Length: 264
Image 1 (cartoon, rainbow, N blue to C red):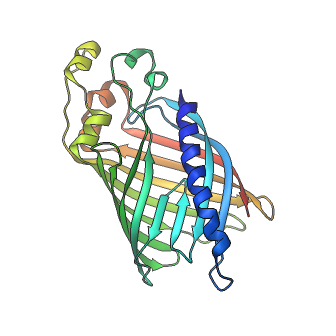
Image 2 (cartoon, rainbow, N blue to C red):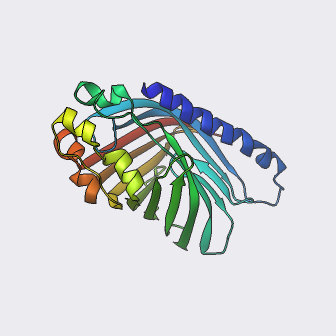
């Protein structure tokens, strides 16, 4: 059930949050002010990678930034620990979370014919170049912590001027996968192909997704606000050519989220 995945993600984020709180307490008065925001909301996302149907999951919202340590953790960008910390160039350790799929996600047409996939944590590194306080670009390279999948992502993010109290940002990204990850999410084994009446599909690595995301934050009080996100993704390469996507899904992938946030 999707709620089980949400509980796993919540437990992971809360554990990392607890680890970061002592760092906040140890910060010197001369250090830049840390950011600590938590909340809860709902996310609407494809039921599985490439699906045309959606599910609604309760999600936590976490945004922790500790500039004095180069540490950040958020439900939007994952975990980053800046070890370079140059004026413009940043880079270091990166971690994130990959959703899986269960029988409920697969639905009556696919359940029992396709394998379910457990969620996985990923870890690796990142490099980022800050052109100015409003514009940056970078790359992230990560690998399954308990698996063979590898992921490469290039991104650029721009923070437009505020519209009154409304804070906003735009992010453009391109993601590729190695063959193991591509086969895990988009492959069709011979037994599954026979059950579904589609060709077997063993894709190789390459481009997987191009996406554009719009994020906004609207303060509702001194310590509270609403955070929303809308992302449109377009599947590429062997991911788009998968029989799962062509016959049971869509190249067009939409994800939306809305959360109530409390800033400390």
